[in-house]
Image (cartoon, rainbow, N blue to C red):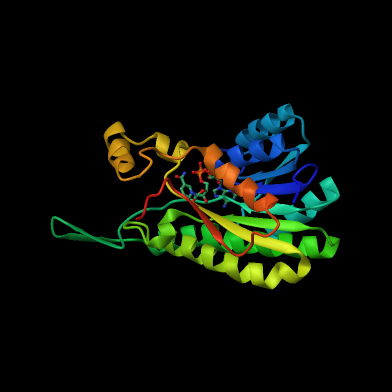
Length: 252
Ligand code: NAP
């Protein structure tokens, strides 16, 4: 798909990877609908896209809330007059061991932390993919859905909730590619390794160094590396049902 003048929703578009993806798409001439929970950050991201020279709008929406997602997708289609894809990027972390025993004291991952991550990282992706696919079918428009999975989908210690959600997102990428192909909709995913974002900028230098020493390319990825991969999936018309692993060669 040629990105110029296409309308693309980016969830979690206010910061981090989402903002980098939005700016990358803006540079290719796409029109951006940015979805997030924080209006101030959304405004800054929208301004950044407009400065590049494209139409961009912000939408406050919790991707885990069915009514909000339905309303947001309808509003985007009304505002822009068309819809050509979504990047399901919004995500959260609530890390912790499932069971932890220290000094004879046992603690457990709470159901709340399990559910919170599944709600945003899996149910949010399902709701957004479903509603965007439905709208694109209704509008008879060419479309692409890209889901952001993670290297943690292989199973990362301390991330039972996150790993489960990211593995499920990779599996449903294949499901939706098969289900939506008949409507001219392709579905792909990117599984990033460790990327320099707000999430990782607070880490201690020693911890970062230790982490990077296990990466064959010896460095963390840049948000641009992920944006470039998302752009590739949009632009390559024979890509569907697969997950691009962009992790510097790291294996968990
Ligand atoms: P980030 O900096 O925390 O950005 C995520 C954005 O999503 C935030 O703006 C956040 O808003 C928003 N968000 C959270 N819950 C939401 C909800 N329910 N509805 C709408 N928006 C919501 O994270 P990131 O590092 O850019 O990561 C982006 C994606 O890449 C995530 O899916 C993450 O799991 C994945 N990923 C990241 C890495 C990495 O190394 N950074 C590696 C692998 C995969 P608030 O801040 O207001 O909550």
